[in-house]
Length: 257
Image (spheres, rainbow, N blue to C red):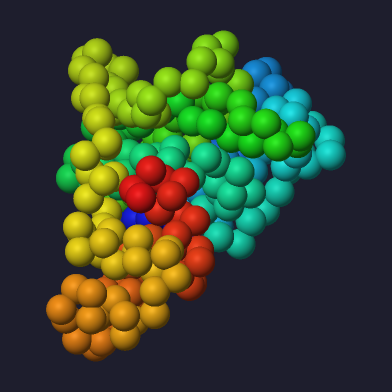
């Protein structure tokens, strides 16, 4: 379950980085920067190469705590533009809000000049499972590390660190901040998260949860089986799941049902 992943992929593809000549040495420079940060902080950093759909993960002691790797200071190449090794450990509610923050952030910086892109950073606080299955609260930040020559989104830095604030509050404290001007943009995704499914889709999913087949759902709501099945497909697509069981689990964990 990974809501908004398609929308984020669309932002990446809309950069059309394949039409630019990129200096591959910049990737090595950014990797060295991330490695240095991790060696000092013992946290975790991920460099995303939006042009080649690739990630480079660097982790200190934090990756051992989270069970991502057996040893600290690990370096992994991931054939994906996503940090799945971390995102699969995220609390479902926080994953949805983090995706919403990422979408707002990338949509926002996409309109800015190269210089302005580097000034903005998205920050949040998320719950991630550790190696014993307990949730730990991490401070997370996302920023553009290197725009392309034409000023498009290219190399992205995402950092994770154990938060000194381990209280389980509502929401992820989502912000976009400008370290140059001090401007802070705050987000609350409670209403938006609740509208991922329409009221009719929630109604149908509740009936599915109660074990009702499409025919009985159609009779109960006074609509056709075709309409019920269309809603069922929309539910799967909106929640980015493969079947109704996963949809019920996802919607329940997200607080939609």
